[in-house]
Image (cartoon, rainbow, N blue to C red; front, side, top):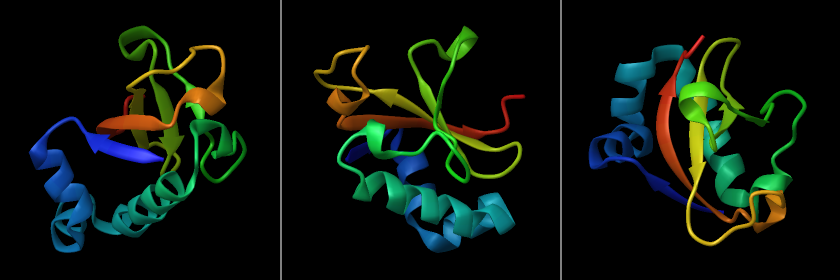
Length: 104
């Protein structure tokens, strides 16, 4: 899957191991693991709904976004970009990482 980032700062932090470790601490390895899963998948449909990634659709402030779990509280928030059908997950082949946060 093609992954883009909401900002250059987010991209620098997430893709640089040292910066990722400084900002997210122990979650750094889990973030790297989830990013590898996202990159290896052909579409969002290939990311499991069950643990550990627990892909799920969001509502409220993040309507039309998806989330992938990192830990019990932290999530990677994804927004589909490009051409896709909202009802067919396999058509979502490009996502933008909006944030990595605890939105609970």
